[in-house]
Length: 359
Image (cartoon, rainbow, N blue to C red):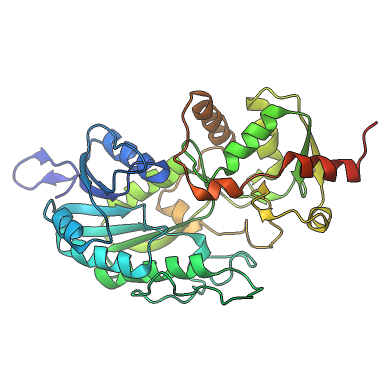
């Protein structure tokens, strides 16, 4: 099937697409974007994390169950699969699903992560840089750190690298699109990074701002990743792209000031240097979300994605729309990662008092 004119009939066929996931954050954004394009959308999920959008053919099942996968395949064929829900699945599960769907799908677009790179987050990264190890048939224990390990936790990256190889093993490099986002923000975010900063801004007072306001950051809006994935799914061929905001466009200072602006807060940002925060035991990436001292964390080259059509909306739009979503009464899908984000108010106040006491 194709969105092109059917030869000899003069008829426009709607793209027929399968979205694995589809009920929350990125998956939901992909579904909404596909429906807006007039595509015929099938979703496959367990039906536990949220409701499918109206207008889709919803198939409920578990991707770890061979019977459920076979039942799913019987609903094909599809022009493309977009896999948005493999983040916590081992490579062998992704491999089994891709192998089952290969006979009934033209292409497979897999949403991966920049964490697959061996150099992340310590070094600047480009497509083609070395990946972490991870075989396509690895189980969930592959790559776990041994007891007492003091080095970086590479388990997640190894698992995702193996999942990429699983997709390529099933569909081949000319029928596989791999998208490697960095940090994804926007309405529906479940990890809690931007929602935490917005809620913290609304509370006002002295706000512990990490590092320097001029520090560059590269978050990407969930809707922009979704549109890019849909564009690729509609395109014959295959390839690999990073998907981040442009290097040097946005800063931490702009992000936090926008949080103050959209929440109409009178809070005061008090910027505290990296070394001081480390001396006070502040956990990078979580206690003050998006703060990390590693050189390469915000130096991911997404040039090939821009050439392929990725368009990144202004960061202020992402912040504004996320606040509007939160104010509308929506809640993110509960996720254990959210509990790890945000510094305790007592600890924040103690650090601010130690560095700059107020009368």
